[in-house]
Length: 360
Image (cartoon, rainbow, N blue to C red; front, side):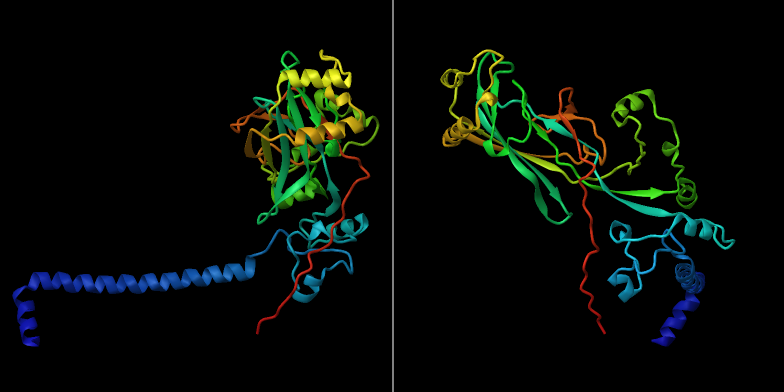
């Protein structure tokens, strides 16, 4: 067999020579490549070990402000400013900043959880007399939860009355004002957002963000809008360019057997004008309770459910009012309600209680 192979090589000298050269080249290149990969891996490991870090080289905090996780594992959670108490003084910060070894001393203070304006989202009227229910939904990333109370309103057909309907809010949910002929409109629940105080010059050096919005003058429109503050200090707040507030709304429309003649007869019975100055919201609590009970016992003709994601329209402290149709199309809203949270309302938080298990 070996003699046959050697004879074949001698008879095909050119082909055999090319084959041998190719094999030598492959072996040489493979060896060099493997060596280079090994060097690159060693360099990456070295860089990670010596140069990898978070936003801070050194984190300075008040004594006894460490959480159980830090004391046990020796690490600081990324969202450590969301909970906890205490901090360093401005004098201490200035002292740290003056040290020649310190290039950037960027203080961060947790000011608390605040809300901004909350506004309504409105929908078109149903096609006929209906009970319209609205529930807001939020999520923690895994589970979804109902956010706030479910809101229920009866829209009763009345031809010639504004857009053709008068309305009556559920007796148990009558916490928002109504006006005659008002479209289905629901106040988006307020959300609380952690506000951080920074020194924008030092923070700019650390992050590369200029924070120009913090130092510019208010425009005349903004000054007029904030005139309610009178002589109180106005604190400028920046938020992420693309904040993600998980908020959906579920709308259920139950069409009920009720016509214009039924609305007119009801108003006459209750002594309410059938013209534009008469509205069912004028009824007293006892009459409202009885009427809601009667309407609720009517057998629905149909039942339709819609769920819309509003996360892209709602931002932390301010958002433009908007309308949604039942196809999910969103457009600006000119008629809306708004509310401002009371400054005395706030929440405090505590660190997550972890169960630490050591695996040997």
